[in-house]
Structure formats: structure tokens, C-alpha cells
Image 1 (tube, one colour):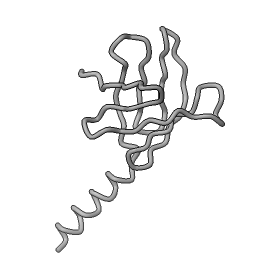
Image 2 (image 1 turned 90 degrees about the vertical axis):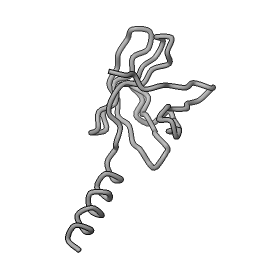
Image 3 (image 1 turned 45 degrees about the vertical axis):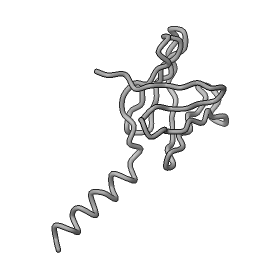
Length: 96
């Protein structure tokens, strides 16, 4: 019974975390997003990097527009782990 409780608790904690860590990019080098599991993100566009924050709610990811915390860009986390954004933007996770 204790093992079942521990497994359930670990699963619950994993589901509650932001859960993103790593770099996603468009494959053409125009934009990349580097996510930290603590809710911070570095957005790099055409060589210019800016810090921001993000939140995750299920398969929805909201990234605050750097310099304008009131606005955000919304992504859908696809089953393959890619991020689908506005205007057809699709970001794929970089392999280490």
C-alpha cells in the first residue's frame, strides 16, 4: 500500500510541475525558446535574447511577451513534444 501511495504522489507532483526544460527552435535559426523548469524562459529572435516567464496549463503554454508582461504568446504542446504557435509557427526541441 505504501508503494502505491508513493507512486501516486510522485505522479501528482510531476503533473503539477511546469515540466519544460530545454530549447525549442523553428529549425531556421530565426527564433528559439529556452525553458527552465522554474517558469523562466529566454526568447531569442534573430540573435537578440530577452528574458521572460511562462506558465503551463495542461497542453497550453503561455509565454509572456518580453517587455510586456500583460501580453502573451500561446502555444499548444503537441503529442510529439513540438510547440504549435500562432501563424503556423512550429518549434521543435533541440537534441543535446
